[in-house]
Length: 131
Image (tube, rainbow, N blue to C red):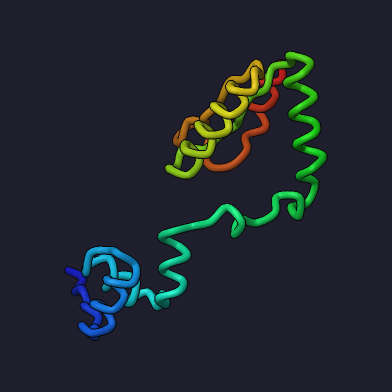
């Protein structure tokens, strides 16, 4: 059974207003409007500021984890970034790997095999990496 696409109706005046305000093509403005994104939210999303980032120190145990990683790097201990095979997992692994490498850490990475190891942290892989 074929699925039918439903095209949302749209207001061409709103699209043009958002297109000009955000400096994006009309199709992008239409997509943002269809998803309920306001003009101010669109501007914030499309022109992000570092000051708008979430404070990582508010994440549970983040300061202790950062300290542990810095100490391991200073002691030249091997650090392995355990990633994931989806796009954000691979991207995050690459960014963290490169940052640690720039800091001079002895760093490697591990991306689990999707069909053999499944999703999430694999205790067998962790044991193998720790050996």
